[in-house]
Length: 382
Image (tube, rainbow, N blue to C red; front, side, top):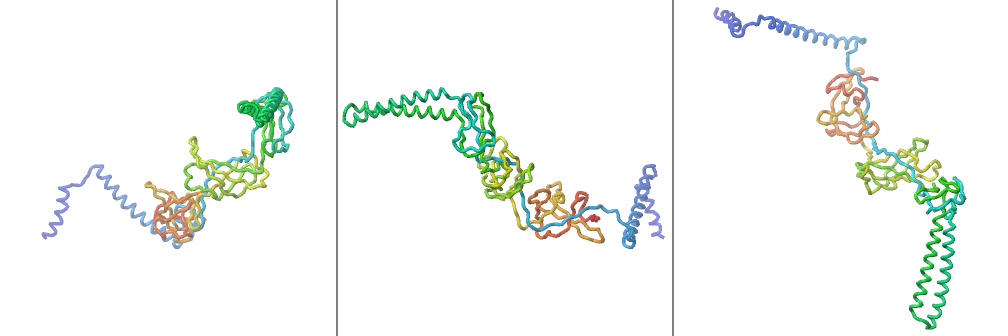
């Protein structure tokens, strides 16, 4: 009797202490809790039935995230630095005159010339007259010196007279050589064997030391020049393999770096590299644009995955999702932390943070990886 009385008094005591909230808000809260319990029980029942149907009914498919897959490739990985280069001839000269009016043009663009050949004759009559006067003065000084030299050998005359005659002869000789050099520089001649690429003046034009009158090139030796950002200074070395292509031509070839510059341009923070062009490339022209890929890293044993498969969390840690097949085209995703080593053209070399976590050949999530979480079951698209 006492026990029955005790059980009867407990709800009364609880109601007296806390009381049942009979207000509208209290009733709605109680109703919400009942509905939630009912919804959870219903959802659990639906899930059990769906799983049973998937097991026994081939027409049933679960509503799972769809992803594409790729494979962790174990093999060689090469990274290149892509830059743009220009063709530069070893011998290409713009030719100037010291001034004067063009008298004759002896060549046409495309003509082959030899070193020293006269290309453009400049009106230099004044220089010729000055040379005639200098030649006369030189002959006089030379004759006087020879006569004074004979007298000096006979012990006739003073040493000072001999030295003065010698000095006057040498001065006249030097003055004549200077005038002849000025005359030579007035005319335009070929500085080396090559081809006349352009003539910039016409007969009767006045030439100027500030404006080129002709251009001569020799394409027997050609190289490429490119500017590389200073951030690659520690990884690019002389002799590095290079792939070269020309966007405007169907020309491709492999080469090596011939030279890596030792000077950084302060205006754009780059250094120069050069690549020798193999002989026998007839389409090479100065300033022709090229695409140059310089190898700065190579590994014979790397783990390579698509770049979009490597994700990063808020702390900057990189990871990928591997796929563990379950049934049919379904698989469970597993998160694997990795280090991103290097990437080139959509492929990335990685290393697992936990040694041995990846060995190559594993299937991983490719497209759709951003919608995946660890342990999630997904459908892998064919």
